[in-house]
Length: 420
Image 1 (cartoon, rainbow, N blue to C red):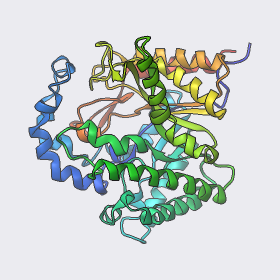
Image 2: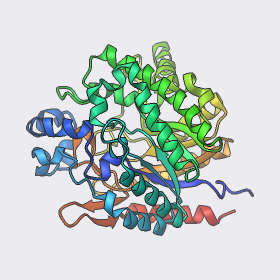
Image 3: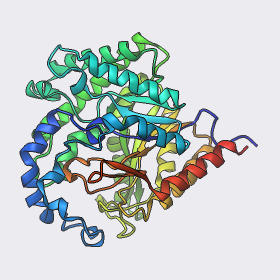
Image 4: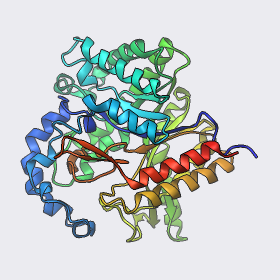
């Protein structure tokens, strides 16, 4: 019997530079410092809608401005070798990371050789341990000078991003096999709607953010060509947020809502870029149940962030994508906010069973990246939501502790690698 997963299947984890590195200075840094006090003062009002607010007993730090400042991060910028050793011990063979634009071009047109040297060493250390680097160009952050020019609100600014992409492609054309252009452009432009009363980036009216989306689509298509010119063998895609959309009732309106959610939520980006993708990358966290045109989720189980948890929906999304695009599939992000490590093992188990089912149905899966390797800074939520396979004690010299769920997962991966 053939193996369920190919020998070169990528079992990995993900991070984002701003969320783990520490010491970044980008447009999010500026925003955090400006709004930390506001976020701390309003946390009770914002989170009261979540039943998990009382269940997980969010620590007092959530009411302090410091919780909402990324600051030193988890010092991954300096501790990356230790983190890669942990990955190697867990049997992971792939790692998705962000090369931070604000580090390599802190001033317009000024490239920082030291920053590039850091990322070259970073990639070399991954490869030394047999871990495949999956380089991500953009995970919501960019230089302050680019923000001051209007960022993606002005199509004329595309050239700055394309220049950055060209520089990175030239620098790493012989060092990486996979490049992701954009992370969740759909969530980036709608993120303000998720945070009522908190003016999170991008701070622009909805119509302007929708226009940004089309700018980002064009950026992806042009970046694909730039990377392919540097090295045609590099495999290029994006990391796009998708949901498993399900009709909760037999109502015609429920079925129409699911089709609309798939078309405009899941497929809109790839329908317009399908010729400029070598594989389909997607992030999965949600199953949405539609009762008519209204999302009506089951009450339980829910994560620390109040998200309804249905991990096995991931296989359904992968199967639909395979049938629609007939391109290899990489899950570029998938995980759960679970500070007590109560649900993560179950989440991983159900996820893997769902992927096995999709694989048996003929879906060509090439990788799975769990979010996140490390506890990290969760944007407007700050530090309290814990997604990491590895807990980080920021009060004790950033001490790393591998969670039991990660140790369990490592055993499952080892079994799959050895089984026929």
